[in-house]
Amino acid sequence: MPDPVPLRKLEPADRFLLRTATWLNLNRCGERFTFAQMDADRHLAAYHRFAPDDGDYGLVSTAGEEPTGVVWVRFFSADVPGYGFVRAGVPELSVCVLPGYRGAGVGGRLVAAAVVEARRRSLGALSLSVEEGNPARRLYERLGFAPVAGARHPGTLALDLGPAVAPPRA
Image (tube, rainbow, N blue to C red; front, side, top):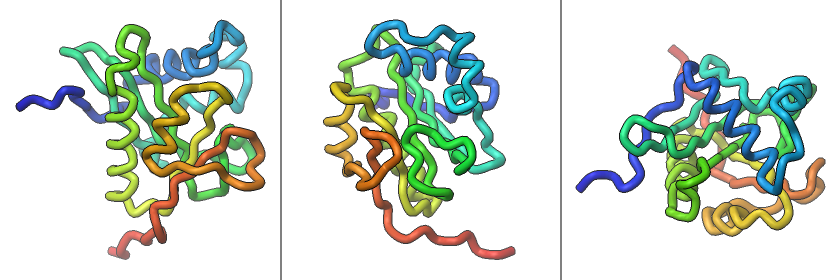
C-alpha cells in the first residue's frame, strides 16, 4: 500500500521552499512580514538557511512531484538563536504545510518522521516555538513536546529524546 503522505529528503536546492515556508509560518495569522523584512532580520533569515554539513536535516511531503509541506531541523547558535532556542546542541524543528494541504495529517506525518530521524541520529532533544492560539500546538503536545520552563520566548516546547549519544570515533 503506498504511503498516504510520501516523503523525500530535504535538499540544499530546496532553498525557495524553505524561504516560502518560513514566510508562511511568520504570517500564519495574517501578513506581518514581507520577504524583504524577513530576509533583513538575521534571526528570521536564519530559519531558511539549511546546512546539512552542520547536522541540519529535513523532509518534504509531496503529491506527485509537488511539495505539500516541509519539516526541517536546524542547529542554531547562541549568538543568533531561533525563537525556540533551548541551548547549544538542541536543534529547533520547524514545519509548514502548504495552503490547500492543511488538515489532512501532513503536518503530523512530517513531525513524526523528523522525530524518528532525530532518534536515529541519537539527538538528545528537539525544540520548537509555537505561537499562542496555533492549533498545531495540540499536535506537538500529542507527540510529547512540553513547555520549557524559563525559555527566552513563550511558546517554546521541547521533546526529550534521552541522552545524546556521541558518534563512534573512526
